[in-house]
Each structure stands twice: as C-alpha cells, then as structure tokens.
Amino acid sequence: MRPFRLRSRPAVALVATLTVAAGAVLANTVSAQAAGGCRITYTVQSQWTGGFVANVDVANLGAPLTSWQVAWSFTAGQQVTQLWNGTVNQSGALVTVANTSWNGNIATGATTSFGFGATVNGTSNPVPTAFTLNGIACNGGVDPTPTGSSPSPSPSTSPSPTASTTPAPAASILDQVHTVGRLKTTDASVQYTWPGTYFEGRFRGTGVGLVINDSTNDYVVAVDGTTVATLVTPGQVTHWVRDLANGDHTVRLAKRTESPWAAGEFGGLVPVDGGAILAKPAARSRQIEFIGDSWTAGYGDISTSRDCAGTGVTRNSNADAAFGALTARGLNADYQINAWSGMGMVRNYNGQTPDTTFRTYYDTDLQALWNSTVWPVPSAWKPQVVVIGLGINDFSTPPNAGEKWANFDELAADYQAAYLAFINKLRTRYGAGAEIVLTYPDLSYLTTALADSIQQIVKTRNDGGDARVSSLYYDNNALGLDLLGCDWHPSQHDHQILAATLTRHLATLPITW
Image 1 (spheres, one colour):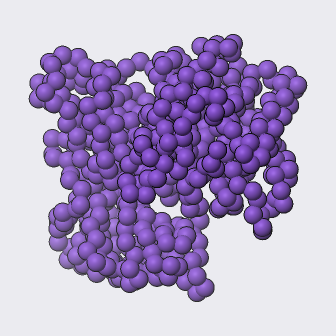
Image 2 (cartoon, rainbow, N blue to C red):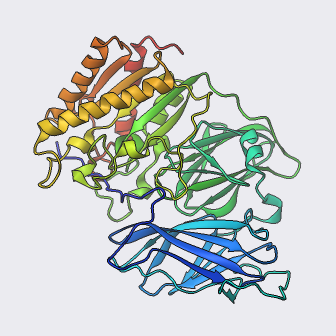
Image 3 (cartoon, rainbow, N blue to C red):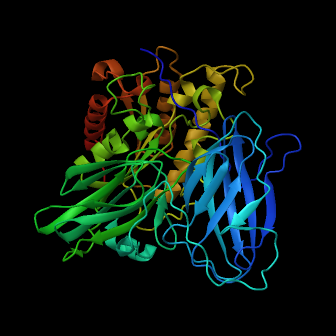
C-alpha cells in the first residue's frame, strides 16, 4: 500500500507577534486623522515561507462613525487571500477593507478589528507605513472640524446582504438554530473554523434565507433531509432556498471544508414574506466527538482521483460526508469533528512544524485564528463516545535527521506518553462513563510502531482499571478500502465502509446512551 501524503499546515501563533527577518518590525502603529482622528495598529501574527497572517486594529479617536473603510498599499507584492470581520478589495498593491453589515459603527474611543491571510514572495514582508480611514490619511491628530459623516464603503468582491436580511444579534441566532459546534459569538454572528460544524433550524413557509459571511469555505444546505445546494466560498451573502411546498420544514447548513486560520460566520435564518422561523430542533440525547487528522476531516473524500492537482483538495473535501458525520447521523447523535489534516499527536506529517501538534490547538474555539481562545466547554456537551484517530502523521514517514527522535522506537515512547496524557484530559472533561475508541489504519508497509503503540495504550488503561478505552483497527485490505481520495486518502466509498465498521464496533460497547 502506498504511503499517505497529507497536507502540511503552517504553524500560526495564537497571540504572539513574530519576527520575519533581521531588523524587520511586524507591529507598526501609525496614527490617523479620519473623520475626527484614528489610530491603526497593524500586527503580523505569524509568517511562513510564502504567506502570513495579520491583524489590524482600527481605533476611532474622533466623532462616531457609522461606516468605515481602511486602505493601504503593499510594497512587496503581498496579496490578500482571505479576510474576516470585513470585506476586501485589492487592486494591484492597493488594499481596501470596508466594514461588514454588523460592525460599521465605531464610537468615539472605541476600536474595531479585522484580520487576514495573505501570500508573500519569499520572506520579505515589509509592513505598510501609511493608512487611510474613510479616505483621510492617518497621522494621530484630531480633526478640529469633523464632518460628522463618513463616506460609504466601496463595493467589495463579495455581495452584501440587503437591508431586509441584516443578521440578528448572535444570541438570537443561537435561539434560532441547534448546534453543538465550537463557536465564538460576535455582535451579530457566530464564528467557527472546525470542519463539519453544522446548524439546524425550522421554518414555516415556502423558503428561507441563510445569512453567511465566508469567502474561504464550502457548505452543504439540506432541507427536510435532502441536499438542495452546495455553496462554494459564498462570500457575504444571504442564500435563499425558495419554491418549497408551503408548510413546516427543517434546514441544515454544514461546513464541508477545513480552515484552521479563517473563520466562517453564520448570521442566522431569515423567513420569506409570510413565513416564520420556528422553534429550533431539540438537542439529541446521543453525542459523539471525533478527534483526528485528515481521515477524520474528510480530506479529498469526494474526489474520484488520487491526483487532485487540477481541481484542488479543498473543492474535493466534505467533512459532512466523512465517516464521523455518517456514523453520527446513522445513530441519530449530535457530533463534533475536531480534526486537522497533517497534524499528529507528537509529530506532524514528515516532521513539519515541530513546535506545534494537534494537542496545541485541541482546546481552542477557532484553531489557529488570530482571535482564537480556549473553548469554554458547555455543560450540555458531554459526549458518551469519543473517537480518536491520531497517529498516521506521527508514523507515516521515518524520523528525519535533526528531529528529536532517532528512530520509530523513540518516537513511539513519546507518542504513547502523550496519548495517555491526552486520554487523562478527556477523562477529566467527560467523566469515567465515556467510551474512548482509538482507531488506526494499516501502516505495516513501513512500521508496526503505530499498531503496537495503540495496543499498548489500551492495555495500560485497561490494566489501570479503565475498561472504557478500546481500539479499532482499520484493516485497509480486509475492508476493501480503495483510497481513491486525494493523495491516497479514503474515498466516499471508503468512508461509508469506515462508518459501518465503527458503528459495528460501537454496538459491542456498553454505551450509556
């Protein structure tokens, strides 16, 4: 069997401001005079070869603003690829960022922020030195004669919702929909990054609108259990489902793709004329948490070819069709998919980004996003089953020269210790009654270190009195996995087999549903 080739992900610091090159300054504060005065703080939060993530704070020192537009020019060919908490237009070197429909107001003395990811040529990434706010250069002063009004934002590359579809406050959004995903609330939306995050609602009428702001991810929309749309990087938009039979319906929005450093935003449901948003569906009594890497995230699972160079991995990935989602829906369980391609328990694919692993980000709400924090686990989230699939990236390539492990034996020792500590964390969080299932595929073409380690971890837990830890071996050949997904990953055919195999294993466990 061929090795699994997994995407690597750049390590992104959560809060630290890093240095890109000798003498380079990444946090640059310049003051601004714009409709009464402003101050811009531009911070490069992390950088890797070919890209970086930055955050921009906009402090209003003058009269209150009802809309804003920040502009600057890059000097080294940087290109913004994704942006959150705003809408972006880039023409050559000139970048213009305008407010969204929910964050246009900035009171005197208040600050708003937006962040973005961008590409850069090599390592040269000079920070911009001149900014404007609403067309006026920033210099830190206060305009003695503020105009009291602000120019309207210029058109962005993403369509804006109409006035009738302005998102409701975040609290009312969660009153509209059922979700168990890891979220961060803003003034008028909820943000999320983990793959497979879903929202479920009910409505009456002939249609419904879904308010979304996301230029990075893909989504699937289902009504009454039937897929009605696939949204590819929809941008800032209200997506309408129309021409349904008049009556009561359910709607489900699910995030298909991974975006560890770019958040999607959901702004709630909007009824059609004469319709209504109904009480949200009840939470399910069964809960499952899936923890893992690219197999769990659904990397390339809807591709029909192992070579996805032409169409790209992202467009061929669907966490909502991966084995975790299939298993949970088959058991009528709510679920989380907390997965990140290329990440391992102690070692990422081929030893990349050695300073971070999956465990670095497991506790976060928004993974590697600039404003990510520790996710406050709600009391309602108590999964009876936790399924872990971490280890492929640790062991699918031999340790390289310069890594901390000289061989698989040394790697296995650290892997087992970290895994046991991780299980302790889960036990503390979810209690002694949760069933923890450790899954692993066939890596025998290279090493038995993964299989041996998993079996030893389970034995250690069982011998210590924890009988609710078990293992599940995915025998690729015996199960008939074709691995026709991108880069030799499981295909849709394979994920259905994996879901059935996992479901059979769960049926043998004394789960207290």
